[in-house]
Image 1 (tube, helix red, strand yellow):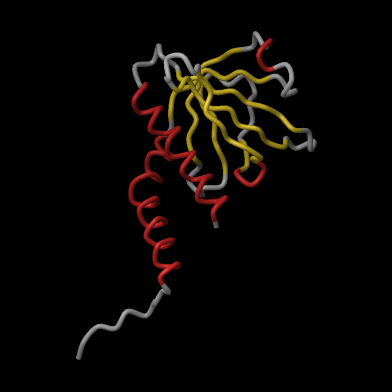
Image 2 (cartoon, one colour; image 1 turned 135 degrees about the vertical axis):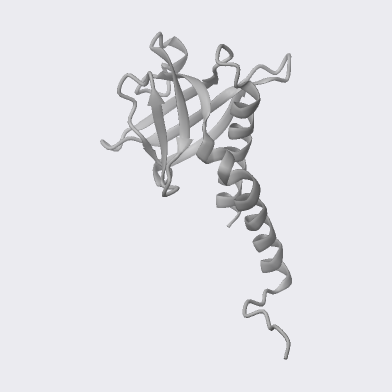
Length: 147
């Protein structure tokens, strides 16, 4: 008697399943571990660069994988539901090719589009972990768009 795999995939589905398995094996734990960021929030996407309200915190994926949770000095920044996120983009300068952080555009509970800019907290000594977190988040949203 031999083992028969109950799940069979066509070639296209097998590639997608392989990518999903790689994500769950490598990147999900990174997202749950979180990263250290400086937050800038200014309810309007037009005025984010003028915001002087900057604070340090840890951002991680919730245990149920449905929210980005903010802990630490958040000054009231609420958790962001993954389903409410409209876009995720790298931030940084083109001159030195370094990623400085990530910008997340989402719909707040009032339905207004909000831009949250998360800059890598260089004071914390966790730059590598935070950069890995950003990479994992970008990979997650790329997979969502492709599915």
